[in-house]
Image (cartoon, rainbow, N blue to C red; front, side, top):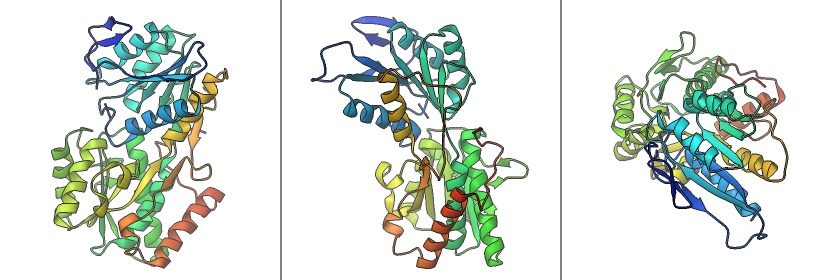
Length: 355
């Protein structure tokens, strides 16, 4: 989850206090020759290369630019939470047409910036600050994580699976809730007693790295889960989770379920990954930017909520595990998707976005 230094644009230093990198600018060689539509993104502290939702959101901007050559895009990366408001305001001062904040940690800063600039179009991933000029893009990842929990339970040889988070915030715990419920559903269907280590949905307490960057913290938490017997682990901790995937690939003692972006496309540890609980952030961001560039006013209500039914969330292909996942288990996981999408199975989480 994010990075930032002085915000530089047009040769002017707009925010020397912004502790982050200069914005990365991508302009088009072609275009109409008229005024460009500027879409500007502020990452949270995980940075643009977090292999997670910042990476996904930037991909959405890149795809919007590719689809409309009148769009120019740039980003600034926040190194600390104190940078959020500075970086957002910097883009307001640069007269960006569309300002995207990435991550629930940016909710308060985005709300403050939006209220101070009511005519500015903002958007945010993984939060809904409830302000008219902020377009919220949220994802009911509990639905796809439910599939992943069922899958993990079906793949476990020890009868114990684990999950941990970066921080106990809704965009994190929603995955963990869905995962735990998927395991419970497997147990009920199969008459088994697979245990979830690292998260208790009832008490909303579990294991956290308190960080989204430090890989050694992720490895430390997953090592503890493995020591308790977990042989399938789902980290929901951004870049910290790379400590878990690297260790899993190195020692072969357990496998991993990644989150946000297909781990076989975004991490070097595909051989250790069973699947990924995917948020389709790129498509949501791309669609929002294209609509805004086309002159559409993005409505805060209802905003966008990604589900299994609208392909806003999903589980990724099994990749290296394709031959290792039994055919009947694959079929059961597919049926769960259909049942959730149809409303036959209801997935609940205190962290679910309101529709």
